[in-house]
Image (cartoon, rainbow, N blue to C red; front, top):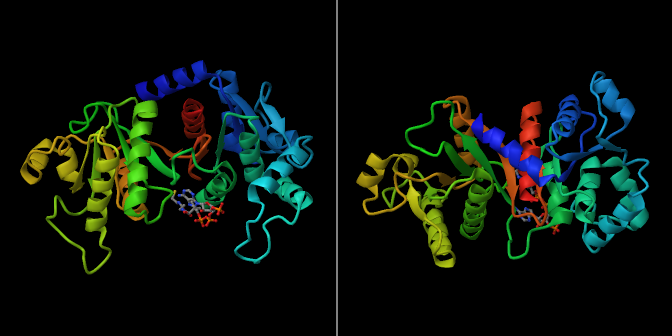
Length: 343
Ligand SMILES: CC(C)(COP(=O)(O)OP(=O)(O)OC[C@H]1O[C@@H](n2cnc3c(N)ncnc32)[C@H](O)[C@@H]1OP(=O)(O)O)[C@@H](O)C(=O)NCCC(=O)NCCS
């Protein structure tokens, strides 16, 4: 697929170092070997030679840097970083400080490879982080939220999927690439958070998707045609999110609130939102919440045959990405390439 070929080519040129946290997973071990062999990125893989051989006996790991958190010479350095980053934070379950001292932080990171990987990134020993092949999204993202934190000027970490049209293209999306957000991270974003999501997704559309973004704030209502005042009040939320985004970012091509057909189909856009420059031509779709977004991207993927790349995280101070637990080796390779381009 041309989009993926182009992505891999750009990642090779970027020549970044990415940490993969899950040496216990066959797909991750195979992907690590493939990425290094093809020169897509340099890889730090968390795990032992023994466990990698156990899950993928025939894989040649030459060129992959294997790091075992339990015996790493850098564990003290990372424990210090973790302790400082979380000093004063209280564990919600126990009511006690998250880490009593540096020794407690060290004991923790020797067991939790996701946190260890996040600390490699935080310390600047890698340019990007990819995990989540065998851990939940919440457990993959939380170390990032806790220690990597948001980029300057950004309050919300969010995610998007880069959707690539099947062979033959799509009559509604001439570029063949569309972005959906947030389908995986922010559960019920506020209007302010939706503004952050829109701005970050526009940026990802340019930097990774290679497209000029035209954003639609999505709803079941178009320009006030429906209301859910008795229920979630999502229509006024999307209207407010649009207003905030337009005021803060007049340079963005964004409009709403739109039903999906009014956003993407010119004939419906003209009918339901006459005069809008975005209606009927959107290629970046901002959903009201994770339910709508997650269901929406999976319909597009499974029934429409589009390839879904992501979730691509946005807004972190350093690039950190989550894999779907259903991912295959090629998905991991693509996610590493995206991460390298965010670095
Ligand atoms: C991402 C997620 C794990 C955050 O969980 P959470 O319970 O809110 O996390 P916590 O409350 O422990 O927050 C951890 C830290 O991150 C911060 N944080 C949480 N969400 C954030 C966001 N979107 N942006 C920036 N910071 C955020 C919190 O303020 C907190 O900071 P602090 O500990 O330094 O004070 C949660 O939103 C989630 O589970 N999302 C859905 C993931 C999912 O299941 N997806 C499935 C579809 S693929």
